[in-house]
Length: 510
Image (cartoon, rainbow, N blue to C red; front, side, top):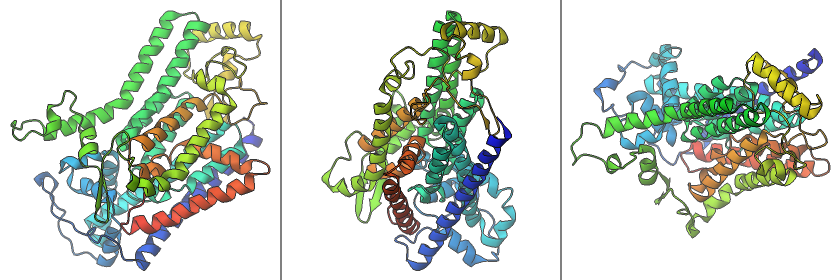
């Protein structure tokens, strides 16, 4: 990539970093403002009972130098943040706490016991844990924004659209959760980072990032779908281009092992919960889920403990269509903007290139079979295989598209744009690689609408790149861009202001 192209891209990356930092400072300022002006609904956040386990003894009580600052930080521990801080402080004490995966608490513990140790005597141990959580998540968000831009540049092949999409991500409607002690920032960083490394050709690194995303949020295991898509295309190339069935078997085995690796951290955590709760107890003390054929702790917690507390109302029920009740209409209205955007994003791609979408990328827009290596066949092959593959593709495409051209090679910010097979006459947004991204969004949106508490859709879908890619195309569309821009930014601004107001004061928001 020439220096003339590299320099503007580096400049855009710096702009994204500045925008991400600005957005986080804005959110933190709003949290402080609303906490100052409004009394919280629940004032129990400063409560700090002793840990149950002797393995997690309370930190020795110091004479805190600035107790007001420590108290102010502790007051900001609301909603799920209470659980994450408590787990970091005392470990997994109760059955319902196993709904919160261990990566964020582990990062909080690591930071509080190293870099932030001197602050324990200044603001107190629990406040240090909370401060570590804020630091981890806000730094993770800035890095996630950088990866979001890099992935967008590769897939969209349009720097302007990639930049617009990244700015929208920096100021997304679920921003309050990315600056709080929640798992959204870590999940976004690891998912986007894994996606970047996958399309860069570093599949093994991508597996590690995807596996860690499953340690942050349970839906991180869905990232294995990207590896399945890659494996499917690599197997196609091995069978139909290289005519080597044994290589296809090897590809399938490697792909299956990579997918298993993504699931291992989540499964290991379920085994950890089973050992702590079920192992060594009498039948009278055994929990019901321990005797199931597949004793999955997470699903049991979701169905028995997961609720949203709204005043005096306890809204139970995570399951298919269990949330479809008239009294839940306000929650469906809260989720309607993000769900509408998700549906429009999916429909836009399907209607633009249905052949590619419904064939999972195996057919071109003219209905012909894909003529050469898939854009997801990114692993480097041995030299002998590489020359053999180039001969096959040259014979089929008259040297128009070669394996070397179609492979994407990325060094830092130097991109060779992905999938040269896509016609430049088509919208640049419609790269073949967007198929797994769109399917991922479709599955997540359907799950949020039909199975989950629908009001969490805003933050549940907020890390899905196709939402912002589609929105960025609306913003830069001639004629209607200004109108759509006003609507999109009004939506984001309203949810940022409303979310920071309600959430930070322990009122329900998504």
